[in-house]
Length: 582
Image (cartoon, rainbow, N blue to C red; front, side, top):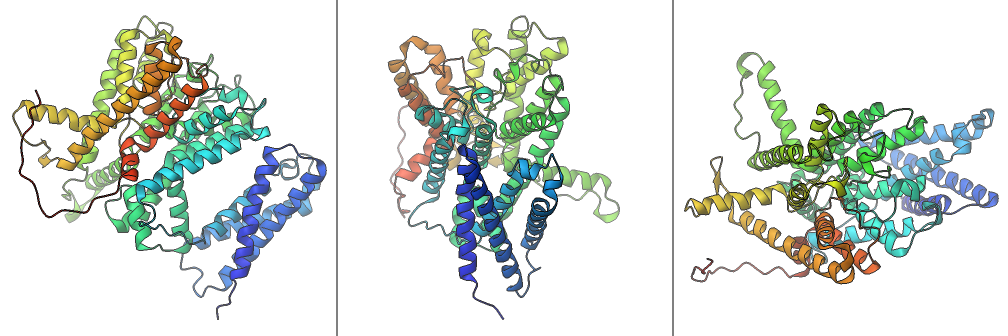
């Protein structure tokens, strides 16, 4: 017999929400002893209500083990009970008790309770009220404003932060750009750096990805309208596969970031970062920042920092990590499917051997992979040749190879630098402009006009030169809508970047046209590389760069789709006429 426990669940939900506010107040402001005791006591009220709500939900469900959520509930309950036990019965027996000295373990229990209770709330997207493009843009605006507020908290920085600099940093983190107006490693406290890391992770994947998937996971279903909206935002091929796509995104992200963090940890020199906790935080921070193509670093000069610029193992790991992040989730999943199919064909026996499965590697993956490989290879050789006796002079031959590869890969929206950017030769800067503008692959954590856009534009030029009226590749014809989107994306990007250059030049003419243009291209393509003018820009120019970063992240085409009302399909066509082009 089911009981009406809605009041209990609502109480637990609002308690967990207040618990999150207590967490912000706890770490964001300095606390007196009395206030700290009150907050700690409230934490335990929150997790107690969370436990009771979880048990009630479990007992009130006729088939509690039918859904996979019971595993999460079990882990949460075991962890919460462990925290209670350690704090109440064992904690005082240990002089180095982490729970008493650092309540982060208690806070984690509060966060688990908040996630569980919030995920039970019904989330319904009304396409009549907000279309997917508007929902996507608003979610980014809200998380930027939230990040600005968090970075303004007294304990987020050592010496405070102006509103414009807080907004700039939050926008750069959420839009996974990496441009900075203050040094991340020295200006922000550990709490402030954690806020930036949270904004990078949420901005890289999108807050709706997390909210929607966890809501689906805990409730076991979703409305058709929700799935339709999410399929448009996450590029799902089928509406029914939308949550499978979200699950793949989260699993791939967690796996790659965890693997990268472990690998980075073992490449670090213990004489440079000796405490274990600092090495672990450094590894996690750079793993998330690199996979999300954010470019944020706790080092003053990024990877060019003394003691790290010759750590070629670290640079190779970062290349692989931000390379995978820049490929895009659909392509990574497609590659894994292709490798699985190839592996099974190699080792299968009997009648199942050599199973023919056409187009395992889709045309979208082929075009983007080939374009990425060509751009990276071209950039590598040009960087190596042009900088061999310049910025690469201090490295060994192997070091020159690694740093040249890093220099060719990082402009494709990663944003880390392993050389002095101001010392690059002019031809190298021009190549960097091109690589930044093209950027990463679609549906990735990177920015730019995207490799597929550049590939379609290039193929269209070749088709026109051959006198063909359509684009054909791999025995497939590229859809006309894809060609139109590609050229719209190119045109809009140049308009936004050009307008940004004009406005910044108007307010900061002394910065120089080359530096301003580099900053604008970097901001639009969410790269984060700079020639050193970001921090010294006027507040108006910083605001312009903020807008460019935001537009580059959500794309100008999405903004226009959000602003313009979609016209209804017409059942007629006007006569076609050609317009003189050249």
